[in-house]
Length: 179
Picture 1 (cartoon, helix red, strand yellow):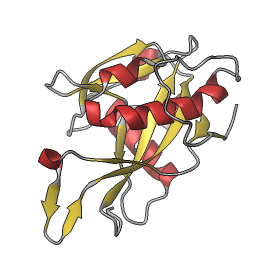
Picture 2: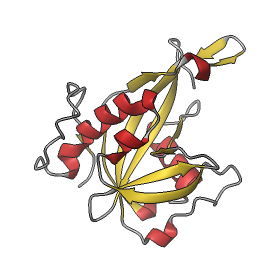
Picture 3: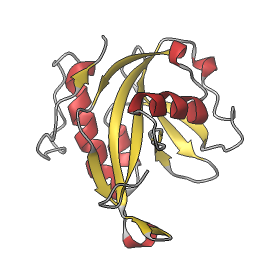
Picture 4: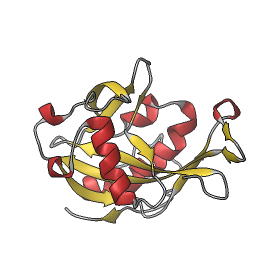
């Protein structure tokens, strides 16, 4: 779903474990790592999109995770010109994302990257909370920083300092959904 400004609506997924690490996934047949994310379809709520994408990309269902928090507003990024796709009259210039923080409560063996025919990822690993900012493609780094800074107080109970190299002003504070 692309809005009037050219941004595709998207949900992003941050899955944490008991060690407060997060799941980072490798794009299928690429050397590119990112957090799971996917588009919001027409007439689909953010929550429905979240659980659909969670199942499609990671093979997990709502019973495998606890929903902890979300960013309270859309966080936007623009695509570099070489990534802009023209779809008839609609031009997608970037994405607007709402990010959800989930805790894996099931066994890791429930993570199945090949449970659907359209495979997005072919590997995954647990990483330090701040690592995805460095691992993701350059044009997504600012949104990853904004999102992780927003969710960190919830995950770490306001007892975790933001690394000094991430000095961008805080864009929003996460909304606690369940903890």
